[in-house]
Length: 207
Length: 121
Image (cartoon, rainbow over all chains, first blue to last red; front, side):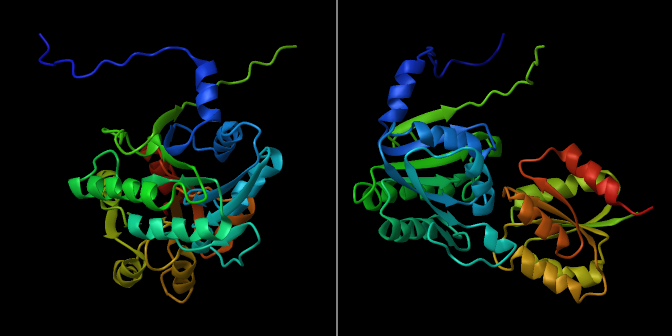
């Protein structure tokens, strides 16, 4: 006899139409959990956010270099969206000069520094969508300490207070579930939690 | 037997890699950042270094530049969550003695295979 008890039951429903509407109209603090390592999958998602409406995206990257992002964007366009990038990774290997659509900087050391970086670049680029890729650098979600969780929740609260509603209305936090499984989702501090599940199969060619 | 240095600011990952490599019979040493690594490099004289690309303090570029002036020039296996472009990867391989590039999260078997492929003797 197993000594376990049910603590929660999840209900699942196929509802792609509703999901499409949800993504098109998302606003507020969004946690996007994904199982993919490809920036191109993030581009697919961003193309669905806000539908065809013109929007400006501030993308703060701690995972993909701007050069890598450009390689992807040359093949897969961001429809009707203008992209500004804060590249926090390229300075590790080579020096770069800022361009009109990219700022190079060292990665923030903690969530406080990250918040300052976000607010500074919101004022600079005036985006209506901010994407932070990724959170996994700051907190070990598979085994977070109480202090780490406290700092993370305080970060989410301050983002809502200081970064949403001034020029932007959508703030997307990207979390790669391969970096560790989040045991407790921050449901109280986010407006929507979405899971992007990319399923890949070998292409079966037919003559 | 080859000597391996594990350089990573994430303590859990550093210790896990160390445990795995030690089990395979390699002599190991750990360092928590670039400065710690450069200090320990002279004494330990590693043959191979697994080097995290994103650490506080010295950048990967700084570390590889510093190594150029050292007597001991270990083979470097870069470990990183960062996705670089092909052009940047080429630059990385031209910087110092970089022999491989593994993206996190990685499979430990993949890392062991890379270490064995680059071991001497």
